[in-house]
Image 1 (cartoon, rainbow, N blue to C red):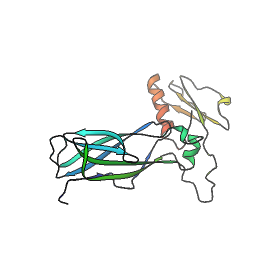
Image 2 (image 1 turned 45 degrees about the vertical axis):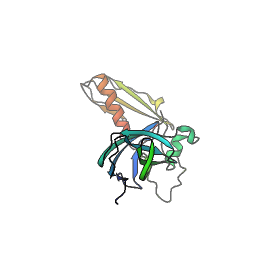
Image 3 (image 1 turned 120 degrees about the vertical axis):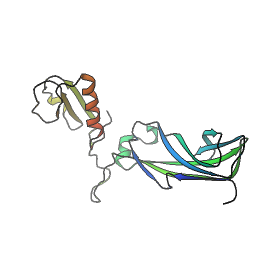
Image 4 (image 1 turned 90 degrees about the horizontal axis):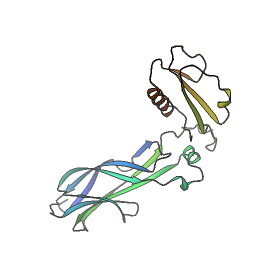
Length: 206
């Protein structure tokens, strides 16, 4: 149009972002906006959330054209549900509504724009229609061990816990739940264990 306005080019409305929500308090959202017919010397771009009244941030020295903006948006804590992990297994998600407006000396001018995003946990199981969504398929606890030699610790594997051991010594382990990384340092071993669990198909609380 011919008037002053702002438009959100990316992400598009209704975008679903799959990420690890459990334990997160804040998420960064990258916006690409298009500003039209705005040449104010004291102008800024206001970024709001929820009802459009809560200002997240203000970007100064904006002019007509494309602009990239990174928005830090707070997420509801675990008090939003009795059990965060249980909520994630049921398909828990967070709606994130972001609104951008052009400001001149603190007053909104022109047409604003908004985008509604849906944040979900990437660990949500894609359950079969015949499977009840309340069924708990994940164990809450995983024990990690980083040692030179393979160890036998049967008590750490139970109905509520898993166990993974990384062995960095020269002798290859033979039992299930072991990772062999000969010659790695202790720090490398912990990083290897972390990413092994993080990239797996289970979500652990501890």
